[in-house]
Length: 125
Image (cartoon, rainbow, N blue to C red; front, side, top):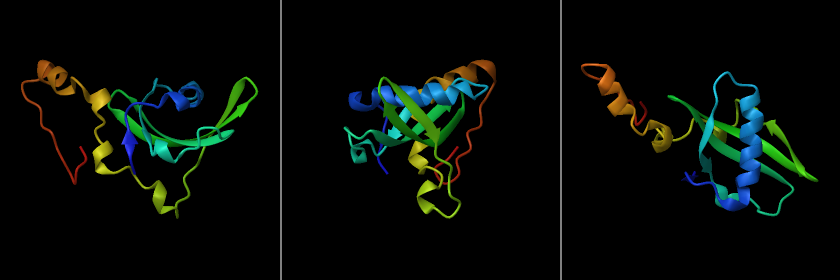
């Protein structure tokens, strides 16, 4: 899996449509901090399956969306994970923590506390 932090220009409108659709159902506002395997997507396809890394504060999730262009708008749906599908396992350790939403985390935490304990387990924290 290749994770790209910068969304390619050719997929920005689809990614924005998926994010807007996702945030309508959430209590928190998420932002896109990465896209998985963007080079495997067909740029001219009417329907795309986007694997996005979404973060809100200290919570990050990998979600897969089907985005279909219909005239001047997009239809978005969430792809539910098949428990037997090994490709939908948790993202590799390099995704956790994503650099975008964690910038400044340690500085803010140290400003609020006398010390901070960081726990790492197999590349995750």
